[in-house]
Length: 221
Image 1: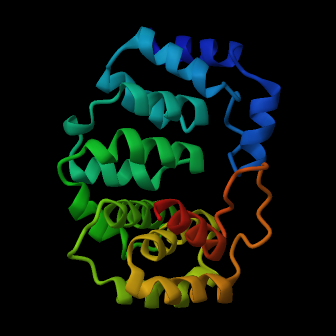
Image 2: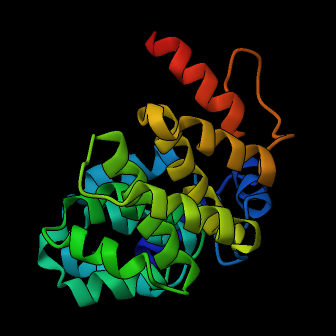
């Protein structure tokens, strides 16, 4: 299928409720609001197609970019190309799929993480903190966690919302997995107050770090 044909198919799958949800979450107008499950069905039919994925990404359409992350070949990308893709992300959902399905499979993801931790671009910074949180969750021992807490305490209050999310995940990961730093992580979360009033369904844990860390530690015990 050609890009125009795929865009036409995606448009036919557009869902008003999904489009409204995407918009509320910060997605641009260039979208059709295709349900994520429907995108997976389309990707399964297309199968892996690296060049087509790159062409879909270049459209800047949210649904096309999401689809691209499912059919691209991560290892066929150079680190420079992946950095460019990351910085041209359209919204948080695309960023999360790109990180999960593409960056996570790339052989240079650690070098990119280190680069992105210094980036001013919101999507690159979001990715850097995302993979830092992931490394902490997996038990990494080569990270300067006190220095990360210093950065979070100083930078998170003024960071862009897209970056705050993965910075907060890093703060939570430190609190959950590092007993010696737990109280400091909780104190930082309390001081900044990010997501304090985050609405959650009954039985779910909010991303407000003091509550989140306490609940996860309780479950571990």
